[in-house]
Length: 550
View 1 (cartoon, rainbow, N blue to C red):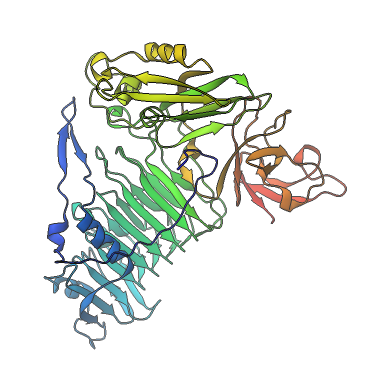
View 2: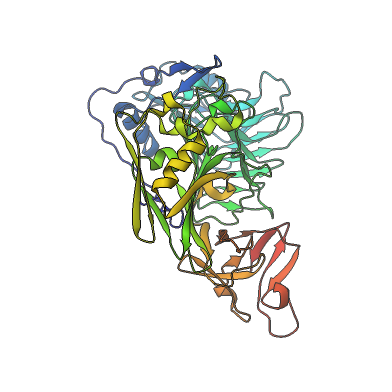
């Protein structure tokens, strides 16, 4: 795949796996973590990849169940049990090969800290009629359901009143390699009592997959809260398919060093400004744990309504590398085995014209176990180039920079972990060989860089006169052009969110546009404001968000 930010393909793939042989139990599926110790003595926990057998089970459970036993719960006494907790406690032998389903008849069931066993399905028999509720203020009973294993939750309403934490929570070591499916459920938190009052929350565990389908998040403070796991490379695969959110979404960071995937597909966001807050920043001052780009979430998906991403207000101190063409009208591409080490898996390209020099910049992941050793203990030392390159003495790495169709290659041939060559020296050595572009450090990170969905399009300036902040623009061939006065609303692609004197990217959104403008209606006219005469109204701005009429 070509590594470019201009076109980021996305596909939703369902994998059907036919398994042969013996199916192992849940206890045998737990992957063992290997522990390493950093220079400061802290333990580093690494996520082991799926074995083929574990991955086959996970993929199979995503698409079908294999129910062998059924238990009926009826609050009126007409089933096997009158409450859900007794039904859960009665299951002692559940596994992938021996799955249970708890079928719940209509009613309002009080529950606290349900911990269903592995591969158990809890299903409301009639959608919208089974309510799981609690008003507990006991810190020991903070969730209605504490999901600690693979399982399914279908046709349930979660109603929390005084819960100090979540209606449903996913945070347990037993979630390693787990698959959880939550379907047609509604989560409501009334917001009383102490605590963050989040309806659903959790953390990343090794190879954890969670899918929410057709779920609703309503009521007070219904912001989803998720975070990674400190000092690990655990990454969660979190999907929301066809869900609706009243008050947005929040995904935070507590100090891991791997990017979790967050997918929104066919979702609807209500409530005016939707805070799609995805923290890119990792904890300070323990920067030795973290990669250079400090991105902990990758956002994917398609077909959403009302999606507005509001980035963190904090500035990201992560550093990367920037290539700038020496001449104008010269685009830059890169290749070679050193690209991943220096620029990361994805990088951003600014196209050139007769006013803008081509640019390319990116951020590479690196885990720093050298920090704390003099003289490499400052925060910025975390992302030194020598740590990214590693030992290149046996197997050399190359960087080929092609500018205006002319390639030049630099070969890295040293053991940089031993030499610890200063970045200023490395940059001067590279620039002495690659003369058609200048490589330099690049400070800070675009908060939009972790969005990889059609709702976002990165575009660059196409006009020689450039664009001015807040101008209405159209898109042609991934370049932004000033929209002429009198243009029909359908031809307006968005608003420039920064001036383009130096070729900055223009952020274009196909739905709502994130801009910092005063409230009011906007159209095509003098100063982009409504004016007397034939003016096409294209939308309005409210709380710094542009809402198009079309």
